[in-house]
Amino acid sequence: MRVLVTGGAGYIGSHTLVELLTEGHEAFVIDNLSNGHEKALSRVKQLANKDLGFVKGDIRDRDALDQAFSEFNPEAIIHFAGLKAVGESVEQPLIYYETNVAGSVELLKAMDAHDCKKIVFSSSATVYGTPQYLPLDEEHPVSPVNPYGQTKLMVENILKDWAHDGRSATALRYFNPVGAHVSGRIGEDPHDIPNNLMPYIAQVAIGKREVLQIFGDDYETRDGTGERDYIHVTDLAKAHIAALGVMNEAAGFAVYNVGTGQGTTVKELLAAYGKTIGRELPFETVQRRSGDVASSVASPQKANETLNWSATLSVHDATSSSWNWQSQNPDGYGQ
Ligand code: NAD
Ligand code: WQD
Image (tube, rainbow, N blue to C red; front, side, top):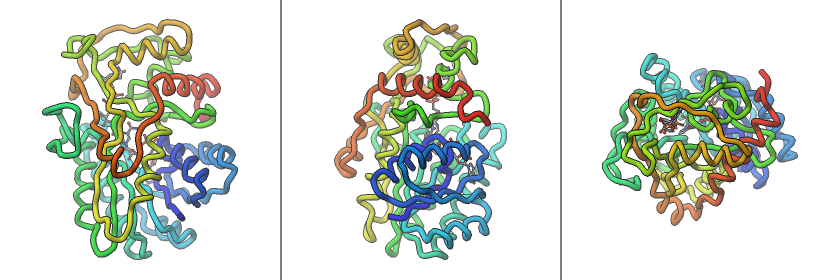
């Protein structure tokens, strides 16, 4: 299949491209490189030993979209492009609504104009808000607690309205993506100080940051620290291909959780990373981060059954691949 990948130069996009190309699909990327890296795309090409088209452009820019659609004539879209920092979305909500919501509408308009009828969208477990029960299944009420989460829910609702008359849309609600490609050639390289736990730990391990701050150890969990469902980025990448595989003219709109069903606490993840690198990593406990929940764990049953997809990689696979990437590329892609 010819797949246009928005945000393909980013963390999850680059890993998905490797799997797509390796499976024999053709791919083309549109990315404005605001948080992505052109070098990631050249490494994707080397890893898959395949060619890959690229337009540096913004999904809010209809001319850039038209250029990508005209050059590549995609049969499907995987839509990663967007902003993802929760704290920043509280500070600057309008740029989140403009990029994530208006940008997605522009993309759908371009799809209609170029007769492209399939889209897989990066949604997030954040749409559930504070869990009312665990594990979270797709029937759990949605109630995002920040603008970033609102944008994801809004786009899901727009896709639901759009997906008729032969159009199909699948929203994947990712839990916590972690790890890197097994080769260590591509990985997560945020342009700013990492917001998320795993890339922060990786930077402590490589000596770029002194100490991990643990945001609260008085939660109602096994050891008092926050519990999350960490999904290996390679497993997550494969979920997109599984989703494309079941989409057809009658599919309409569908939503799936993408997680492992297993929870890991902050202290457990830190200990696992320490075991991977053979030394304990420094931490200090500070107060809770506002907006955090105690636990978030997926029920991945719907994806397991309907997409015939399940996570196969462990937390150990995630820490060792993350370290492989971080130690081979201490400065990331070096931009
Ligand atoms: P990322 O920042 O590494 O990748 C996003 C890519 O989109 C970047 O390469 C960036 O340059 C590009 N981009 C941003 N705005 C753009 C625009 N206006 N036009 C064109 N390109 C643009 O992030 P990621 O972790 O790979 O996340 C990919 C998607 O998955 C995002 O939509 C994110 O919200 C979603 N998601 C991520 C997580 C996570 O924890 N990483 C969890 C759930 C959902
Ligand atoms: C995980 C755990 C923190 C950093 C966020 C978004 C969510 C999704 C994934 C995009 C929590 C603790 C973290 C640190 C810490 N993104 N922590 N010290 O908050 O579950 O989810 O990223 O869709 O929408 O909200 O992930 O990695 O930030 O935190 O103690 O320096 O690690 O308190 O318990 P989170 P995270």
